[in-house]
Image 1 (cartoon, rainbow, N blue to C red):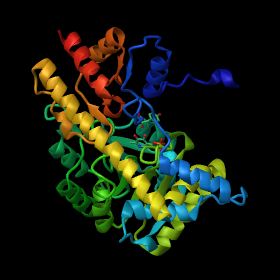
Image 2: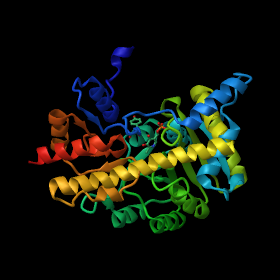
Image 3: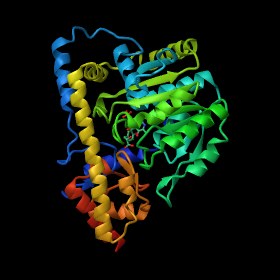
Image 4: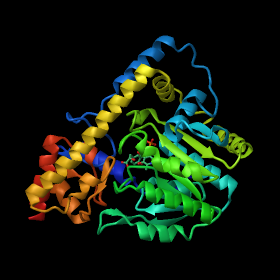
Length: 394
Ligand code: PLP
Ligand code: TYF
């Protein structure tokens, strides 16, 4: 039967990661996949995570099954982290998921159950898994213009015009902060306008918040989510602990639904649990147990926050250092936008040809669309990048 299968399109970002690892050159620089690296080029396990893991080894009394919703303490802590202290908890249902990706998928599955034929509006550009997941879940998708290469910022007028066409039954996916791949984020004023549009037009916002704490801080990065949650009757939220807890391979995330009324939230929670059950029965416990241990303990939480603050501060320093290095090396202030962007990524505007020459001639790896992972740099990497770009630009 398998000979009837078609080969699948490789994941461009993961393929680039494999090519980087296979590159025998000593002097190479990985600015591809979205993984935070420290000055030594490592992606360390956070202190708070190690401490929580030690505590779990000592105190965890059973590995008996939990439930399709995962760990309720984890879900409650994640909802509080994202929605804040004023979360309308009686209207929210949440389940633990297999990373932020699992949250996006199960929420798309929920939309498909609730509204057969629903259309998901995706930003153009967006994370390549978004359209792939929507399609796999049986949803149609459309795109809205998000990015203006001329200003290297959000194409606000075009975005607003496109979303004015979305209506009831439509789902509009928005990156909560640290937009992937562009690095260009919405202002609080723009979030308020989107909230008003959602109420006016009747579409349902779907917030993908995969980088809370990597932009301007845990609280500021939830601004858009909280503005929407205070205004709209219904909303979908995908959360990830991959970056902010550096738990990438442990696959920790959370899917939350804000419903119009408590009874609808119960129904959404029931359906999320049913979807989890038919997909994998229940999520793996360990990573979520680590997160709920950290968030539930004042000292561990403080240490984690300090580690997250340090990662964010380092990315911001790399951004200003790289913009300064490019200004000096190229005698061109055309890359100053890098210091205005937020999160791990910036869409640089470098052409596919330049990106390819950076890789082939200098061992500097960017994604083909010109996205760079700023969090993959260090002081030497900033110099290397500036030198490589100066060389290929001639
Ligand atoms: N959403 C966006 C926009 C992402 O960039 C990512 C990847 O990091 C995710 C969701 C989900 O990541 P994960 O499944 O590793 O938690
Ligand atoms: O965009 C990135 O680099 C991260 C990591 O299939 C990632 O979001 C990339 C591709 C993928 C899963 C995660």
